[in-house]
Amino acid sequence: MIKEEAVSRIKKLKQERKAVILAHNYQIGEVQDVADFTGDSLGLSQEAAKVEAETIVFCGVHFMAETAAILSPRKIVLLPDPHAGCPMAAMITGQELRDWKKRYPGRKVVCYVNTTAEVKAESDVCCTSSNAVRVVNSIPDEEILFVPDKNLAVYVGRQTGKKIIAWDGYCYVHNRIYARDVLEKKRLYPDAEVWVHPECRPEVIDLADQVLSTGTMVKAARETTRRQVIVGTEAGIIYRLKKENPKTEFYPVKEMAFCSNMKKINLKKVWKALEEMKFRVEVSPEISRKARGAIEKMIAI
Image 1: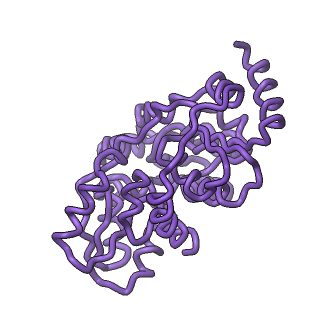
Image 2: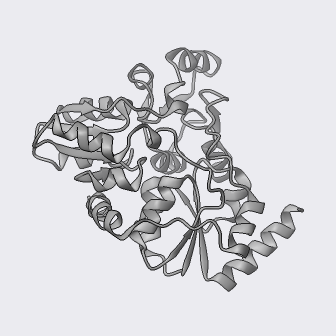
């Protein structure tokens, strides 16, 4: 299908279905271009909660669409590719979290948004990479359980001074960014500033000038006076950074920092999702009720 035709059909179907398209910063460029809102997990969660559309087409991965369905139970939430999952979210189940909590009675559980609805339902409060430090600081306890990202847990522990007991999970994309990758890029671009995501390994974070979520990277890109920036996260964000800030040169710290699940959605799948109203993501009322409390606490913070 010709790109222009797909875009035209999507625009027409959006009106007919009273739909809004949300896209994560890691989506391919053509999907970002057709979206009504592009952002990080927190920003898209907030948009999902407040948009007046009857249908949400979520261009991201499954846990994100689940979050939208929880926050907007009266809306239809569609995920254009039902196989767009998150390996990190799959690293812990609700039952595993219930068993783990028994080993640490009385401890509060902070749950990264990159988890299933069932895991959120077993947690006290959710967080994203952009507000994880604030969320943990909002809890008076000095010892906290954190699931599932151990790298983000280390970063939060350093920033808050609290003892963070972490689940042994990780984002395979960020975990495969090594200190040697940063040092090599710095050798090639010695005048560049280094931004990395807090899901990166501690030794990578130690080499960064700034540690930023994807949403914060977008804001920082608009404000920076640096001519060159090395970006340590999934390489899909480079498209948006370059598009919105053509005077700045952005380099991925690793060209193969690539999430295959984030790249499963394309224009044709967005069009088919709207035309056939597929694939709908739903969460059971009981799990949704429990998970919504943890998500709403995060959004309030």
